[in-house]
Image 1: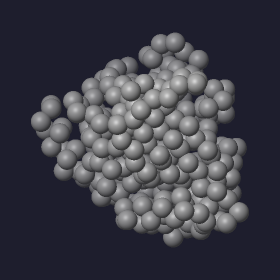
Image 2: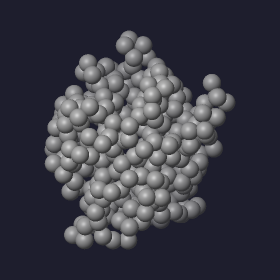
Image 3: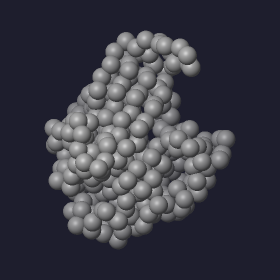
Image 4: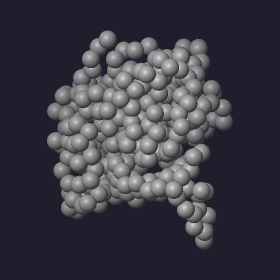
Length: 310
């Protein structure tokens, strides 16, 4: 089994305020109670990066953050996870993003102040960073407005530098989705949407049709389906892997931990179905704690769960 070079994650930095165990989602003019609250590192990119580091991968992270308390909190969390943050430089002209996550046992709702995450541009990514990595991962395509414009060119640069690539699109708050993402996929190796995102991006009403729609001869897609596990298409064969049974506390960031588990396996040249199982195991195990990063899986924990549930 190969040992991958380090992973460069480029993305948004923000802090999550997680309200766990909400009795319901609030309606206008009404108040609901939560069972618990936690301030925790947030953003799809940070959660994925910390999940990869937890699995013992060498990770480098680049994004923008403010010279504020939220930025300092996130910077320290990345350092504590063993992630290389040497390219990060808090900017007093920016404000670090914040997300409020309202979580019930069935689902979650998010409110995000983008802050600095909208300002990152592809031309800020220097070739030296790409040359020092073996894989490039980007999350939150729609939230990173500054990066989105030239994201395809950034992936092309990574390819020329010899890197493999992956993209998690995240949700489009404007719900416009746009054909530019489909064009960007021509430069991407691994695409990691959830089911709702894929259906919206493709305009399809059927999951199988949507998966066929994004086939472009290069990109391989795995669709995250929450409690239903994940689905992929390998040649003409449909592959389904169920979620693992976990007494879930909070689903915040489970899809990002799925990404980490899947990429951990894929970068070690494991079979495609095993990569899906790794993703499902790591996504499931991350729901044991509040927030996206407090109970992310170690490699031993993921392997133990997979052995116990063939």
